[in-house]
Structures are given as structure tokens and as C-alpha cells.
Image 1 (cartoon, rainbow, N blue to C red):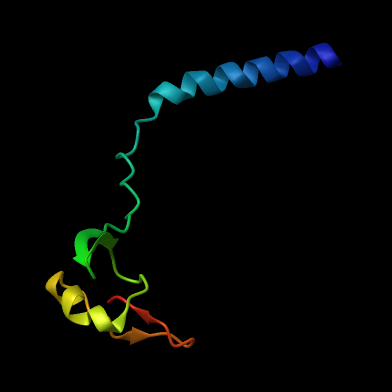
Image 2 (image 1 turned 180 degrees about the vertical axis):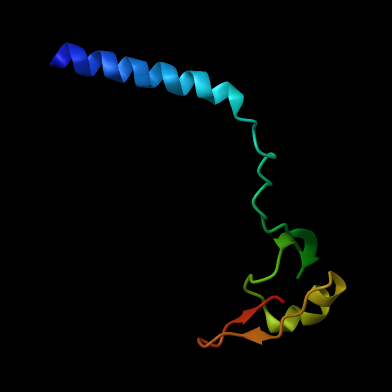
Length: 82
């Protein structure tokens, strides 16, 4: 019985190998969208800023210089970049 199972398993594996080259590969998967940050100087420090990160309202004018705004306030009262 074990020998029969081994032969059936071997036959199945060979069958899968024979089918694999016949399938054409799909288009390469696109890179998952990663959040890219912008190099910025905020409050005299070099930072990498992006949407959703915490921000300080006192530097709102400096964030606007890089195309972001510090106006979104979450339920805990913290500000985030938009």
C-alpha cells in the first residue's frame, strides 16, 4: 500500500512539473504603493515628512512650503499632516 501511494505521489509531482512550463506567467505584480516622504527642514531640523504623520501646528507655514498642511486633528487632539 505504501509503495502504491509513493508511486501515485511521484506521478502527481511529475504531472505538475509537466503543466508548469505551459502556463504563461502573468504580468509582473506591481510594487505595493509605499508612502513616500519628502525631505524637509522643519523647525531647523531635517526630516522626512509624509501625509498622516504627526505635526506641530506652530510649524504649519513650514509644512505648507512642502505642499502639506497641519490641519487634521484626530479624536485624541493630535494633529496630522494632510
